[in-house]
Amino acid sequence: MNNTTELPDGYKEILKIDLQKNIKLAVLVNVLALIIGVVMLTPLLSENIRATVFKSAFESSFTKLIAMIVGMVAYLILHELIHGIFMKKFSGVKPKYGFTGLYAYAGSTAYFNRKCYIIIALAPIVIWGIVLLILQFAVPHSWAWIVYCIQVINISGAAGDIYVTCKMSRLPADILINDVGVSMTVYSTE
Image (tube, one colour):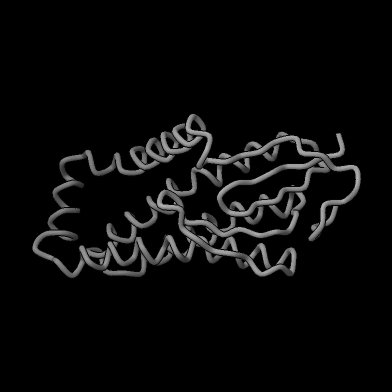
């Protein structure tokens, strides 16, 4: 099925995902994000690396701390912008952006097929993952760990995107997904 702006005849709702209302699922996704973040930060547990990181990256450097905070906030905005760019590319419908207090989001009134929706979901983690990896090796060593911390936010912060990708991959091939940003509804003919 192609992407569409209207739900075709014969499609019915088979799944609704709403992290604002489904507390159990929200906790699961946030625990997944925490696990990913902890795993990615385990290199800092080594005393040699920890000493090097904190000495070179953070010691008496208010500028680096501010840069890291600004980088993380910018990343959150850019992450959602990438979702929106791909939503617009696949549907022609202008996305809506927002912040719920817990989550930033990009949403659309369009219905996306499984392949396009998975691309929409994973695009930010892939694009920014590559950009941040290149940047991490391009900046001076004393700044590399700051970029790495933003990369941790990139990967762990995409836990919801990873979750929905896994979930959508297991559903029937004909599904259409409507993601309004704070919730998504999946439709199928099966």
